[in-house]
Image (cartoon, rainbow, N blue to C red; front, top):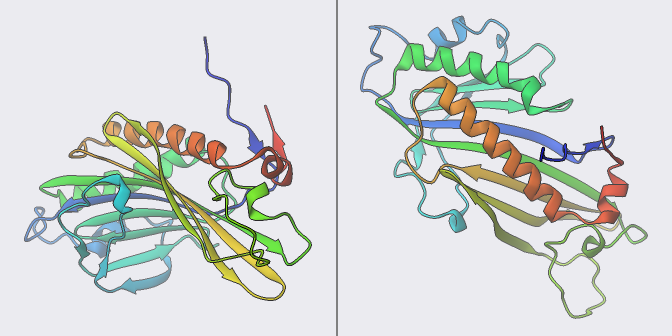
Amino acid sequence: MPAQPHPHFEKPPLVEAVFELFAQPRAEPSNGGGSVDTVFHQLPTYAHHPQVVGQFQVQIPVIAGPPPSARLVNPAKRQWTEDRTRGALVGPGMLALNMLPPYTTFDDEAPRLRELLVAYLDVFRPIAPFSLGHRYINRVVLDVPNDDPPSALFTLYPRLPESGVAHRPVTVQVEAARFHNGVVVANLALAAVDTSHAAYVLDIYARTTDPAPDVVDEILAWHREAHEQVVNAFLFAITPRARERFEEKYP
């Protein structure tokens, strides 16, 4: 029996999607001169708004098991499409595709991810990928004090005793699913609050649990399965009232 298609949301809360690959780099690029700039030379779409990203720490949800052994990523460079809605972050030990709205479906974006993977693996030829990540970051801003309470929108929101404070600092992390070589973690947190607004972030992140594949088609297959699991986790994490708020539609 075919699976029911996922709903479409006319007003989705998605603010960013990120598809990641972390790898063990070689001491020197194997093609005798390859570099981050060589990768971008193969990706002319990403030729705008360059940003140098210094050494930074990879943040992995702790509930998902032990993080990759290499926590610090060497300096990388991010460049964007001209309209600054799609960005490629490239470094010797990592690759990420950052997507800002408008976002349609993973199938629409998969060719972009393939293009980045082919260029990155061709230039750097890392010893081995060790982790893949598939992340959707959602942000919901509520009016204070007349909007829906967070408990009416998120199934993850904890049952708390009455205190007279509508938006208390809260962070909830739940392992939402496991699949072949993957785990999905859903994180809900109050990100900001003032006298007029409260912002909640629902961050859903899938990553590999075993060594990642090193073939482009297999990497894309993992991301496709991760996408299905992340969408299911999102639908699990929101209530019928949230579905109304985001204007859920089925094909």
